[in-house]
Amino acid sequence: MIRVRGLKKHLAGKWVLNGLDIDIMDREIFTLLGGSGEGKSVFLKNLTGLMKPDGGTINIDGTEITELSAKKLHKIQTQIGMMFQGGALFDSMTVGDNVAFGMRRLTDYSREKISRMVKKYLEMVGLDGTEDKLPESLSIGMRRRVALARAIATRPRYILYDEPTTGLDPITTDVVCDLFLELQKELDVTSVIVTHDLKTAYKVSSRIGLLYEGKIVAAYDTESFRKSDNPYVKQFIRGNRNGPMKAKNGQESVL
Amino acid sequence: MAFDSLKTRILETADSLGGAAIMLADVAGWMFRKPDGLDNLFKQMVRVGVESVPIVVLSALFTGMVLALQSGVASMKLFNQPVFMGTLVSFTMVLELGPVLTALVVAGRVGASITAELGTMRVSEQLDALYTLGTTPERYLVTPLFISMLIMLPSLTLFADLIGILGGYIVTVYSFEIPGSVYINDVLSHLQIVHFAHGLIKAFFFGFIIVTVSCYRGLTTSGGAEGVGRSTTGAVVVSMVLILVSDYFLTVLLNALGII
Ligand SMILES: Nc1ncnc2c1ncn2[C@@H]1O[C@H](COP(=O)(O)OP(=O)(O)OP(=O)(O)O)[C@@H](O)[C@H]1O
Ligand SMILES: [Mg+2]
Image 1 (cartoon, helix red, strand yellow):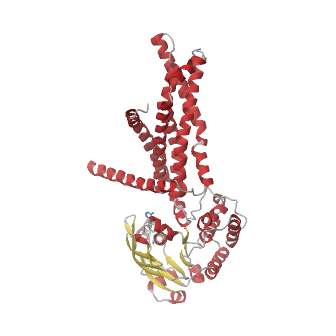
Image 2: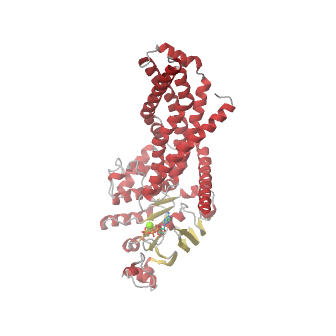
Image 3: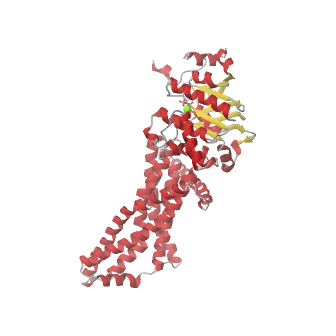
């Protein structure tokens, strides 16, 4: 399980994360909602140790990762799969090599097994037959799905998804949602999904949290979240600009 | 005010030196272990070495030619005949211009592309992705680049030395109509292995400078496409200046050690 306490991160002159507390239980799908620029991606990067927090603690399966040496941290990082918001596909490699990359390093699969698994994972995300293509020849939505396949291919204990369904059509979104549920049944995996897509959140999550001004302002199981009276949650679900959360980008000052 | 900006500059430089030292320690640890992907090491060898051959040949050939031309013309004026052209060309190439020119060419060509590639991978989070896929940028990308550069720059330099001497031969024989055997005799009767060692030790250090600067600048890139551009130019400029400055001090050192 992941236990985060008082997590703080200062970036570009402001506290992006400001005392964030959350527990992520084993085998759950925890979805983090939050407006654009609220620090969702920053949160995921802190969880993976890719960004060093400026305060607070992150405990993964009993290990405090904020104090680890680079070497020990790397051991933990290999148990975490991450789908990056921009895909972060290796653009000098084919799609197949991208998906195989982690398997070649973190599993003892044979060559044959790896190429079989690559096929399987690409099929799972609806991209069979793209093994030999280069990422640049794919659409953005397709690249995201390759990134998804790459993140799950190493069978990590934790998988973090940064906006997995953003920019996908409703049908593909549904396919990807089913994939999450399937993975959850099949693997001993804990997932953290970051998104602003409520439909995806409702469909797959066991628990949903809401990030605002560097803190988790609400975290309930999915049913309670939908029905919640929490003013932040209500505002986010309704998509209302008036409420406790202020619209960003200085919208007020335009008029 | 000026003092403040100087202070920031010094702090920044200290920070870079520290960061580069950490990178070097990490790379030193990986250097003698099983490489992460032999095909990747091979690819980098080709990129650093083989693909630099044409431009190195071209610059070394013309440098050898112009050295012969200048020394021929000068000695015509002084002694009324061209003398010791082979000696002058070969010493200048092997001790000085072979290593320095090759290093400058490689810094511009390979160093820049290393920084641009690593920088692009940094800003598009590809370097971050490596950590969650069982490797690190230092291990997977930087280490093979170090191995390739430290092997390939001395090799290219040796090659440039020979091509430069050949260039001198061409001008000596065809422009000054001196028999080739005289030129070759001038080269062989004075040039020794220790002179090659002098040049190749320099080349090794220059390779180290180029690969350290360009990898470090690439890994620490920030600020999108513009940042990549800034890092790339920065890396080339810093490498070139360090090569030219360290060349003098290396020569002093090698002299003191008797390797000349
Ligand atoms: N590497 C960085 N350096 C400086 N500032 C950063 C960096 N990464 C993020 N930030 C800042 O942190 C804030 C949160 O960014 P983050 O990417 O986490 O937002 P987000 O919630 O993921 O938004 P979105 O939904 O648009 O992806 C932003 O103000 C951003 O400018
Ligand atoms: Mg984000």
